[in-house]
Image 1 (tube, rainbow, N blue to C red):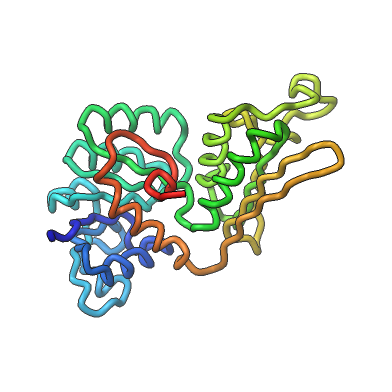
Image 2: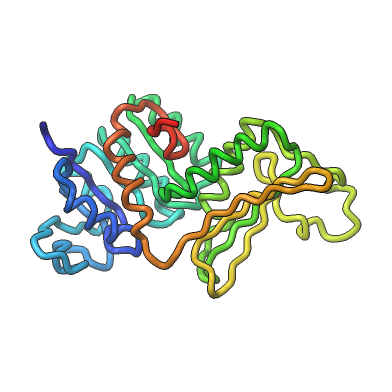
Length: 267
């Protein structure tokens, strides 16, 4: 069987370097190109200190895509992610998206191009299994409990807010129903911002403080009872590697945009 040829954008970052190690160790994958402006012209062995990893590092996605990967993995920043994804699709690659911060409008454009070129895009707000399970449990809860809010926690330097995990959860819950507000936002006695942002039918609050890494609460309330679903991550990027490898192995089975790792999981 032919190995899956992969181009990894953001290969020298916190999550990307852990994924590069995972791909290198996988028997059914070949990392043919990496994108990192700060390490362009090197090989990954030099950039992230993995002996034998001779994958060339390119400054731009356009250069890296000339290696003709089967799958392009986007793990960079929101301001360039959409450009990378569209370029990869038009080059004939399927795409796995790990970058957070893309908007609903961004995904609408990506979806249209993916359908046009008959390629799959699997956008995953969080590859960790506990985050995937939180999303599934929250969808179940939203069928029965109409009141909920989402709290998104991250370190103080995280620029995108809400996080990709929170955006993905809000998108999923919008497919069930919109959360109910007993006091409409326009009737609040005080700044509307105190109630967070209304995102696809959910109230979302983003906390950015030192001491946090990535955490998410989905809080559901009923009279005299509440349900709190929480995902918390530690300092390692390892929890995201297994989910990302699963996405890479299965994205070629898809056509168009699919949101969430459970698109290729069985429950």
